[in-house]
Length: 338
Image (cartoon, rainbow, N blue to C red; front, side):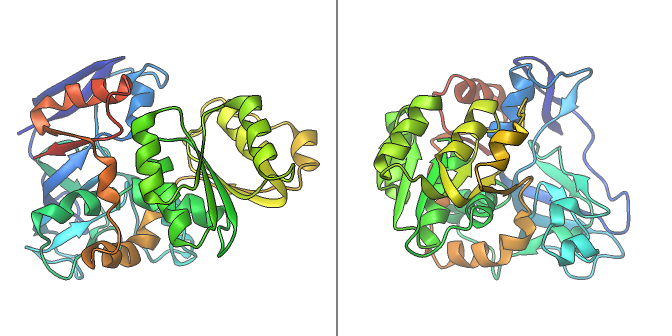
């Protein structure tokens, strides 16, 4: 079969590689129904994360189980399943406390931009749907593997509550789904920071009440002005840069919460500044496995449609164009049809 590899900055290949096989009795092999390009994939694509040798790509996936190892009990051949970008046993203490991305036996899933995928720790990682879903639900179910669960975790970490005011920093797929998550958690006012009309439109569809186009200090000043100088109750930081983190902390009221899920690049927090902010800070790689059962139920009942973040659909063999479109901000998120 062929799969996606990155060879260096802006150098994506779709090339031959062996079909995955069961390697451990806890493995499962799934035939992907769809996969996609993630915003975090752009860090190596842009050369910010250095590539020393060709690397397989892809960590968002859903599909039909083809084969399971001898120790797999909860996942059956023929089931439609969704899993997290980190495989987890879902039984260690960290998993039981709801942080499966810190599982003591975690393995990063990194070969999903391909027709077939080996998933380690299948019983703890994969969650089956009640039935094989219709084609129209596949995009929304795919988002649960990462971006919807990550947006949800950002809102949870930011302690979004009924009637609160929330701010979302970042208008990529995670930020937009953070808006949706904040709405579902009951935020009364949701400020989305975005300079792009197409993304602003989706943010409003998902529940944003206000749009702020300014960034950095100007963005902080605008948010403070909108909140009578107080700041917001909850901020979802969905980018991962120094500017976005400082903007998040400085826009949040004393005693408020920042949930950060943007993959951190060069972020440094001044101790004195943070000390006197009285802001709670929590985040990291989202434990999407914790949220999968609930979010799968919402999608299957058609209560939410997070698949709207996919605004470009390509066949898997055109994966390089999917990266290019997202890098050039011609696309929010690329769905790859297998």
